[in-house]
Image (cartoon, rainbow, N blue to C red; front, top):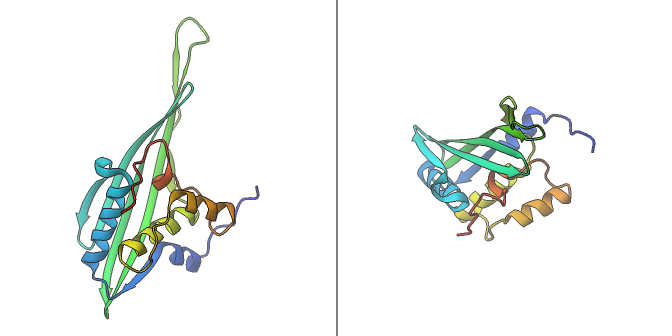
Length: 175
């Protein structure tokens, strides 16, 4: 697969930002809190700020002799002007893996450096905003992880959706 070129500033702003006319900043922050709680209950640590929320979640995945640990940090900031609340979202994900090898008599463990950063792609943001739109009454349906995957397969969106759709570790309830 050919790597996608980086998004322009305008494309990135379109992916990361939404306007909610007629909704207060408090409405938007409450909807985001509900979205994260539906996704994985109390596993999200949600910290309110001044016009913002930070939601953090640690995760672990095991595959054969490899343990992958990571953390996702979502930051949602909101501002109100002229009856419109503007919301901006960022997501940073880090992971590291530990491999246990027992080919010799003594098991050995090797841990990779922590890698990651801002999540690239539009898929996770597309899913987040679709769910926010539903919770705020802008959209009638709740986008499922399967629907988000179909959008990636069709080329409508691209990138990783694991921060909301890693089936091995999420509750992923609908409202």
